Length: 115
Image (tube, rainbow, N blue to C red):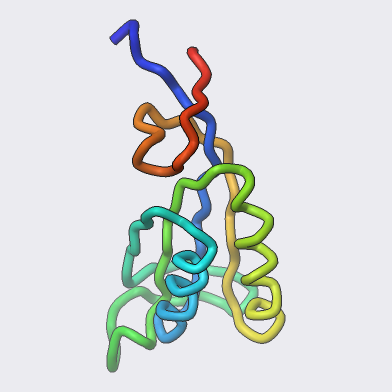
């Protein structure tokens, strides 16, 4: 365990209506995000009130969260890609600092920081 190398990345948590999942994943793919996790049926309360996560009619009627770990260099292009979308639709992107032990899974970069 003492030989683990921790690498600094950014975690994006993208909350979006399920019907726009393809838009979001296409954007991430085009920008070069190597992978992401999609969590369906998100519940929560925001400026549009409470949103229940159970499927009522189809999966397009629910909120989803797309989680991606990316190098800092990709954050700005991703946020710029979502900016026009969020001017017209509800949702949010949370950005936080994280550390990962397997940089090869998230980036083509080979730089790392020992912690």
